Image (cartoon, rainbow, N blue to C red; front, side):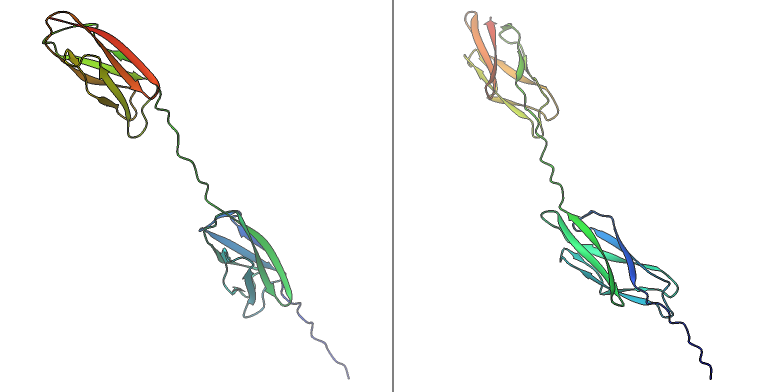
Length: 210
């Protein structure tokens, strides 16, 4: 009697596992691709999945379709405070393949520091007559940051020539005008107007005449 032995199909086992993108930003999705050693049999091949870190979660399994040699699955990640590595494993028929997924924390960019600069110039006519409409001008060495830059103003004789207590240089600008109020004087009067920003200071001497 002659017996014929049917060939035994080799077991289909995971041969490789690739995870992309890698690294992945915490909170984003990644994709895993598992490749098996031979085309999956009729009915497909179930491959079990696992993650070694709670920062990355995978489905319990993925099905390699009949005749196919690979299948993809989604990896969900969570936000992390520091770079974290999760080992992803695919298993079937007593064999497994693994890949490490690096999960990164968001890069925190410090707010841009914009120098408020110093006072570059204080402009005001050197001689002013009673009754004139007068404007002064403050100029900084750098553009004012968001919110503007406040410059303090002072007059040595507000009765003769008054100025606002302060003036704001608008954001993105280097200079601003301010009004000056001329009082009545009986004789030429010298007034010193001062602009102050931190330790930076500029002065202008003005003579108020009739």
